[in-house]
Length: 316
Image 1 (spheres, rainbow, N blue to C red):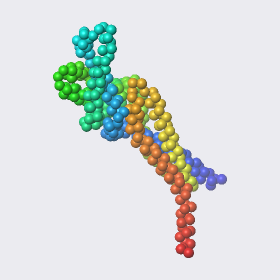
Image 2: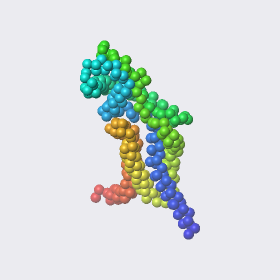
Image 3: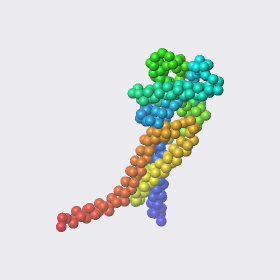
Image 4: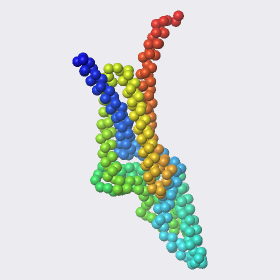
């Protein structure tokens, strides 16, 4: 009994370490991904750069910039002379028609900028600035909102409008806001919550991956039956990663459903897919590697013995 006691304790400790390591592995993967997206500006910009060519994102930018311009254009001066010659009963319809025409004209100019060859550089620039602002906000005290400043797009639209020549195009330019157009990425009320996540991610990305590796290695070394332990380890890592994939899908759905109605759902879908793409790829790589490890460990020794037997039997 005394001889089996240490052996049983060793096997139990190995099993506990393997279980902990299997659970920590996907968590470490998620923390490493989150740290890269939250703290590494170059990595973030590289992730969102392809979205500059996404049709849904382009349409969202067109709508946001057009709304920002139209909210600040003073139409009374443009309509004053026009409405004098219109009967009072018809003035609301004329005003709506005129406003719609101006909006369509502005949106056309914005769309030309957003679909032009220079937009990807502007897109990367505004996201680089926004991410640096986010990083600074989370690393420093204070609860200021984080915004995506679309001023470079607006300035290009103003140049586009001024190139239309004199008349209404010049009137547009004079009425375009100088303050720019900003899209709120993180409201001030949510900054403390995100900062808490940021602190956890910072420590988790440094501690979880090596802790998972040490637990898995230690568990395999302590295991009495290495082959069975390797099978369980591979299956456990694959299962834990699959659970993380399910959790990500549920979190994605709940987050997108909670967005305000003014936010473009197709554009938000594109953002979510781009940002979580590296993490989802890593998760499924862990699922595949864990499954392959379990299968090879289960089939390996019998296959090797059969191969050796066939070789020993010779060609006859």
